[in-house]
Length: 133
Image 1 (cartoon, rainbow, N blue to C red):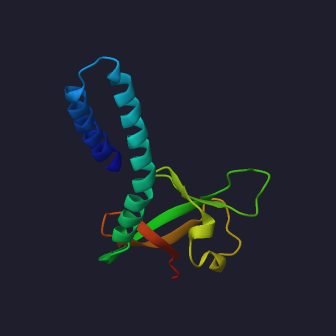
Image 2 (cartoon, rainbow, N blue to C red):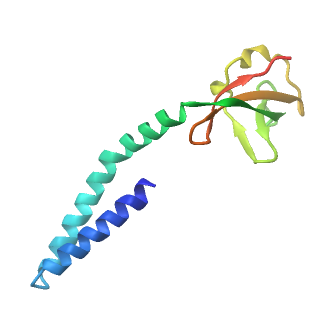
């Protein structure tokens, strides 16, 4: 969203600047100035927008999401730490980010792991936890 907003604003600025230019030799200077301005604005505002959207997403909606994941081994040589993978969405989870992963011992290939997520205001899931039954 930030990229589109910035692109539209810069196109408007480019249009205004090009209308006021009287010499063709000034076009290159104007384009370089706009590129430098756009790059600096993008680098300054990207972390601000990202942080604000992550903060907004931390506002919880009332329900939790429960998903089933299957354990698989990505590397055949390492049979000690299985990966947690969702075959429907074709995505894996990082074990370091899941709370309560130490509760799972001796996972085998194809075991099902139930993980609960909190649903954020913007619709993204966060705070994964192992559901213990």
